[in-house]
Length: 90
Image 1 (cartoon, rainbow, N blue to C red):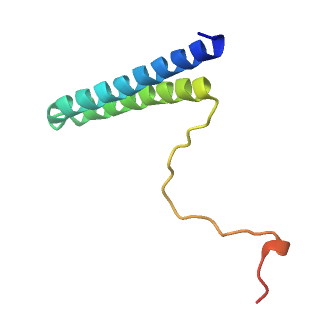
Image 2: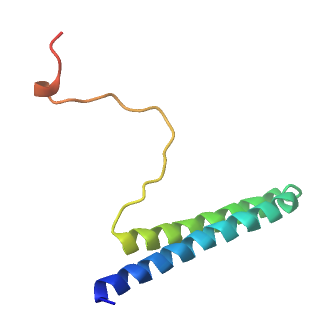
């Protein structure tokens, strides 16, 4: 096995581990959901801890593969801008 193949194998193993971790987190959240209905403070604490875990996993995945994983932001989009030479004449 070449060093490059070994590197790719390690990266795939880490990515598989991240995927299993995400599934485990989803299972935990489903199991705890009923308990947090009685305690909004516990629900908020759990949400914050889950967000921290997801941020750590995102950073690890970004560093591992050299890509940026953007968060989805909801809201009103800005005005479309095009350079003058790309605009259609009216």
